[in-house]
Structures are given as structure tokens and as C-alpha cells.
Amino acid sequence: MLAVDTPQYLPENIFFGIIAFIMVVSALRVVTTRNVVHAALWLILVLAGVAGNFILLGNEFVAVTQVLVYIGAIVVLFLFGVMLTRAPIGADAHLDNDQRPLALVVALPLLALMGYVLWDAWKDTKITEAGPPIVASTSVLSDSIFKTYLIPFEAASVLLLAALIGAIVLARRD
Image (cartoon, rainbow, N blue to C red):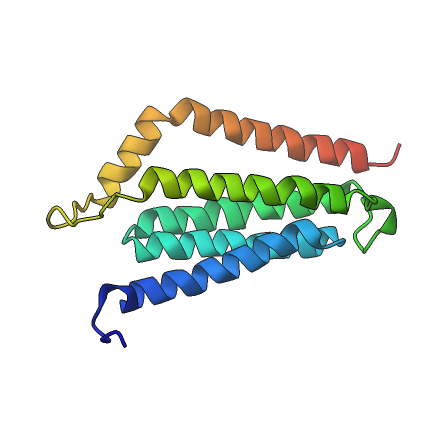
């Protein structure tokens, strides 16, 4: 029997396992639900799990940015797009097809292949702590993001604005 203070029973590892399990179940529900709004709500759980993992890594700035940008903006924009275009919100049987067995036949070998490649690449790697973690201040982190990636950040905002305007144009009555 393992002692309680062994590394695999650290609280961070336990919380990571819980968050990862919630993310995997939610991600499966995103792609298997037939209701578009429910898929967006499951997506919120996946993105919140990513923010939770950033908190576990000690990077609160990126976690808050994840919540504000992805949960607060992208998912809301997605829901507005669905509602403004008058897409069917409830379950729709016409969106499904009979190719699920074929998808499973393709997905399982790909999952096994990716798992083997990851295991083979990392099997002899030991993770050691090189010293105290380097903690960057929020201002240094934000400067590195918004100085280097300012143009892609603004391009993404213009693209999202264009998508919102397109949804409004499609939804308005002539």
C-alpha cells in the first residue's frame, strides 16, 4: 500500500484528475448532444476546466483571461449567432446520420495510435523540479502578449465583429 505523502496523492494531482474527468465528459457531451444550446453550455464546462487547470499551474491571469474571453465572449457570441439566425435550438433528428459505427472504427485506432506515440515519446522522461518556479508579474505577462500579438488579437476581434454583424443581417426581416 502506498503512503499518503507520495507524489501521486498531492492535492494538485487529485484536483487535476477531477477537472480532467469533468472536461472529458463535457467534451463528449459537446459533440454528442443534439441540442445546440446544450452543446454551448457543455462547452462552457470544458473552457472552465481549462481555466481551472491554469489556476492549478499558478497562472491566474491566463485563467481569468480564459474566463473573460472564451466563456464571456466567444460562447455568448456563439449563442447570439444561433439565436439571431433562427437556427433550430431544440433537438433535431435530421442532423444525425448513420455513420457513427464507421466513425468509431476510425476513431478508436487513431486514439490507440496517438496514445502509443505519446507513450513511446515520453516513456523515459522524468520530470524534475529545477528550482523555484519563475513567477512573472501580470504586467510583464500582459505586455508580452499584447505587444507581440497585438495585430492577431485585433484581427480576431474584427472577425468576431464581422460574424456578429453577419448574424444580424441574416436575421433581420426584409
